[in-house]
Image 1 (tube, rainbow, N blue to C red):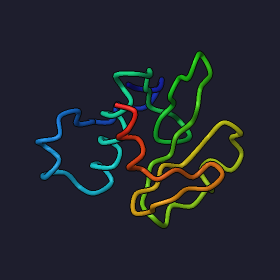
Image 2 (tube, rainbow, N blue to C red):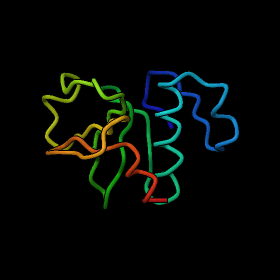
Image 3 (cartoon, rainbow, N blue to C red):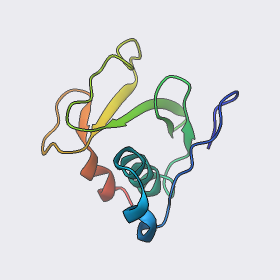
Image 4 (cartoon, rainbow, N blue to C red):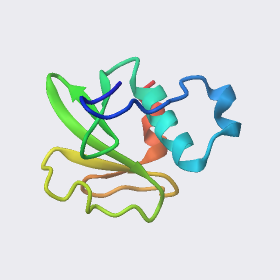
Length: 102
């Protein structure tokens, strides 16, 4: 899971190790662990991840409730998975919904 020219992100794909990680690391690890069995997931140069959906790349940014769209504002096929929200709108999706993909 890496983009050319940048180091790989250490992601935890087993839930038992989550307790020792920082909050942002937990969010990104949760997201990757839920999607990697169904979709190819890669690191991105612009966002946190690129998920391939039927051959089309979707840029994904993962963050907390206050995450802004500035990192993905010029990317038409991008979305934000936010932790700490219950409902989404437009290209903002609650992070917990990624758990239903697994």
